[in-house]
Structure formats: structure tokens, C-alpha cells
Image 1 (cartoon, one colour):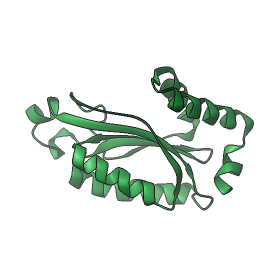
Image 2 (cartoon, helix red, strand yellow):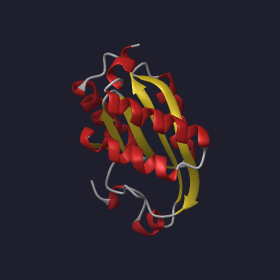
Image 3 (cartoon, rainbow, N blue to C red):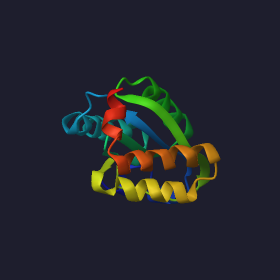
Image 4 (spheres, rainbow, N blue to C red):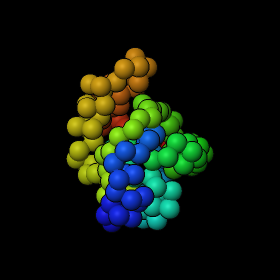
Length: 154
């Protein structure tokens, strides 16, 4: 996919974008095949809604960045919070601003599980809300201990 699949380039460069970053624990039955299906479905539906972003999955954790029109992203988040594949959806940040898309070519892109530590550390470093920082620190602690897979089955 390329930038021309979204509103014309001039609009895309200065669009008002709403973005949400969240993490959640995966339910016990989520495996790589289930994540592949999520990515496939997301690519199809997100294109229709002008949503772009990335998904990191590893050690039983989803970490996702979504960006697009406010109404579309809010609707998607409402769906995710009721999706049985997610447990404990924790919004880490949300904002709305006029800017270029960070992921203009990604209807939804999966980032390697090997990168989840780096993504969580970056999120922790920039977390402004102490509650979010606490959750991120806890997720990193569980990642270090190998307990995240056990927690997702609890």
C-alpha cells in the first residue's frame, strides 16, 4: 500500500489525526496464527476507515498504535475493548493533532515480538501518566520474569 490509498497527499500531510496507544494481555488461546488473522482483517478494515498503525505481539502482550480520524479510531477502540482476544486493555496515550501520519504505508503492520521490549521501554520513557508508567514497568517486569504467558492464561 502507498500514500495514494488515503486522502490526497496534500490532505494527508496536514490531516487532523487522532492517535491511541494501548496495551493488553492476550487471552490464552491467542497464538501466532490468530495474530496473523488479526493483521489480515485489520489491513482490510483499517484501509476503509483511514486508520494506520502498528501491532506488536509477544509474550502474551498486545501493544498497538492507531492513528486516523477520531470517530473511526474511537469506534475501533470500543470494539477492541469487547474483543475476547484482549484482556485488560490499558490506554497508554491519546492525542489529536495536525501532523503527518507516522505509519502512512501501514494499514496495520506487525512488529516482531523481539522488539516488544524496546517498544515498552520507549513507551515507559515517554509516559506522562503515573498509572500508565506503573503498568508499563509491571509489563517489563513480567516480561523479564517470563510470567506474561502465565498471566494471559489466568
